[in-house]
Length: 112
Image (tube, rainbow, N blue to C red):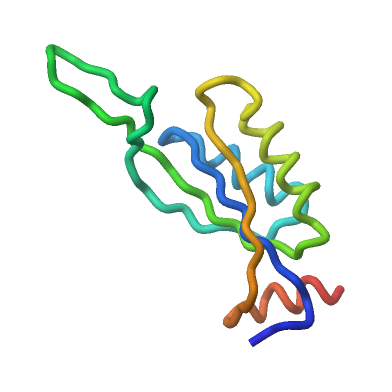
């Protein structure tokens, strides 16, 4: 496992169909890629109905592992690229990564 380079996990949640904006912005800011997971929203503002039937909007969650020193630049690019400063567009946050394995491509990428 790698303990020499600190990493952060950027988690971005947007409405379905908008993950391309997030991935493109992150890549343009230096991220090497991401993982997209599909889900559904259950927040207080997510209760729409059609003909009395409750619907829950589909979401895309983008997981982006980045070098900690690049986190702020990449997060700002995601916020700008996906318009996350506008209400209802999504959320972006980061989590520290204590240990990581299987990221040889990132280690080579970050050594350059």
